[in-house]
Image (tube, rainbow, N blue to C red):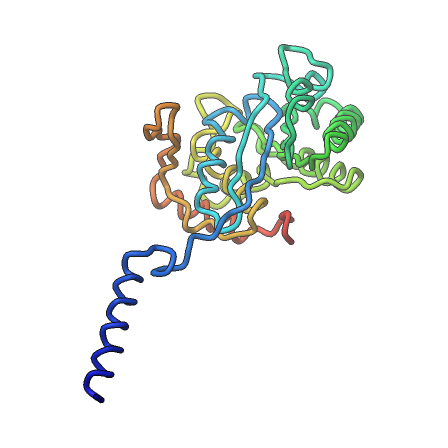
Length: 263
C-alpha cells in the first residue's frame, strides 16, 4: 500500500512537471508589460540627421520600464517661431490639434541663443504654453557648439539654464555632453560633413541622453548597432558604431548628472 501511494504521488509530480515545461505562463515569469510614452519631436535638421526620433524609439526596446513611441515634425533650418506660426511648411500645430502626446521635445535653431536672448526666451515661453495647453510636457533639447566654434557652448548653456529655470521645464544637455566628448575623446567625430550637423556618433549620444532622461536607466545594455523594422517587417539598420565608441558614450551619459523624469 505504501509503495502504491509513493508511486501515485510520483506520477502526479511528473505530470505537473511536464505541464510546467509545456506552459510558458507556468514555466517562467511572464514578460513584464512596459508602459508606452508618446513623444513628438519638433524642430529641424539637428534632430532629423541620422534619425534621432527613430533611434530613440529603437533604443527604448532595451528599457525595462518604457517603450517610447516617437513622431516628428521637423523642417530643415526652421525655428520654433516658424513652427508656432505655421511657416516654412511646418505642420506642428496640425499634429498637436489632431493627436495627443505625453511629451513634446523641442529643438530650437542652433543660433537661437546667439541671435537674441529675449526672442529665445519669448519663443520658448509661447511654445511651452502651447504644449501644456495640449496636456503634454515640454522638454528642450539643448543644442551644441559648431565644430569651428567650440566656445559657442558657453552662451548656449547659459541661455538654456536660464530658460529652464524661468519656465520650469527640463533641458536634456546634448550640447554639454557634446563638449565633454570633444574634451575627453577629440578623435570621436561628432559632426557630419559640415560644421554643425550631428554625425552618427553625435546622434547616438543624443539618443542615449534622451533614453536616460525618460527611463533613468543605465545605457550600457544598448546595442552598438541600432536597428528598426520597415513597413514590410524587415530589419532596417539605423546606426553602426564601434564597440569602443559606444562604450565610451554610454559611460559618459551614465555618469553625467542631469535631471530625468524620475529623479
